Length: 110
Length: 114
Image: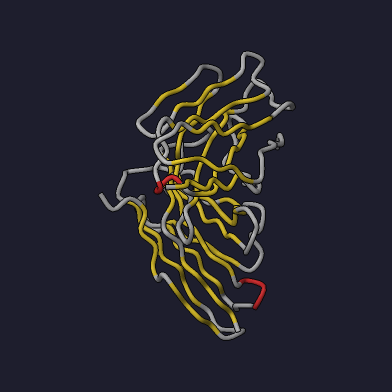
């Protein structure tokens, strides 16, 4: 599985935008970019995923670099509930496996 | 909308005891999964069922068995629990096979084997 690199931790203030980076320089053409988050003592929660084009949903936006070697998860207005560990995961097109790394721990300050 | 429901939420077992973790989803998803998460680590895939009637091994299947009872339900059985199986177990489902779909996870079963 291709590897992703994320900062260990980031901080943000409530109601400000948050940009969470992810590097995946060894991504292959069939790898999807998935983002999940995990709040303390809860199961992972799907955030967003994409292949080549930028994606938007009610939770977040995913900006994918033109060469696909990096991506950024954008939370438009952080809330205290967004404090979680965010995982950037690459999955091959036919794979049934999500390989979770250590992720980025996001702290949101009031 | 319940999503993925896991029971029990907590369990303590003695070494050698057996138990079954239950998982049910109400989203009409075809694929279901069992993961475990050890402290400070990411999730690891134990078994999965790409569709009703099929099951396949993941990364760490030893010591576990699974049953896809019907489209809604996917159970995980520990025949003879060991302390190394102390973990948080997550069930997940998704609409179909492959990476085009996102997973929905349950809230987990915290298992301690003493």
